[in-house]
Image 1: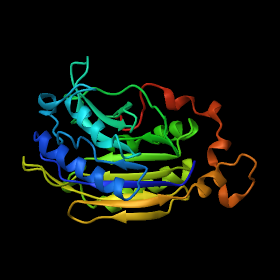
Image 2: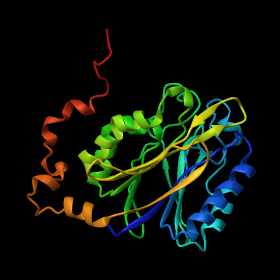
Image 3: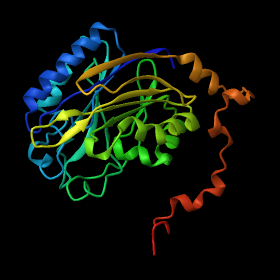
Image 4: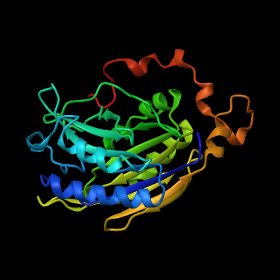
Length: 283
């Protein structure tokens, strides 16, 4: 990994008003390009706005009209944009997709693999956990609910991911976003020696739903190195230090203070993890 400057956006998306949302996304891309960011990440489903039962109406194919416009915005920026949208595909239901739009025109994507119970009737689940080799770092993506399954972060870290981006569409009714994130994201970053960078939708979406916002960066030691929990829109910029993660991941290191814990895994003991059903929560 090389030092990587990232931008995390908390933005208001108006559900169904794709044109309005794309205009705003483009503005943030231009701002981040002026700041010489390497990667900019936007929240979950920010292109069309978040809705469970109506996202299919506004979903789009990839490539499609929205991706064409986003590619044009990114083209001269020397920056990767990670943007959330409802993707229409061959499946009956749309995917919750996070696009990676490269300045050379490449379109990469991650489809949310773990859907909340309220999402399952309306969305299709992704089936892959890709790691993307970008210009300065290897990147994984976990969307909102995905973060509650620690195996995903471990798999991505073992596949070389150095930064995990975590776009969210978390409503205000859930509670204090900062406090909730600190309960588990610090552990994901620390145990797997990754940078973890999260962002969330903010404000009302035009349908009566309100999002609490938030942007946070956690380093591979589990420390919060940048954060913003303003109630309005904004962009959090920070530079990720490559030396820290490269030191931790050095296989020759025997330092207790810079341990890469995944080197000590014992997969032969973990067979129960891949059993289809768990006894937890059963009566």
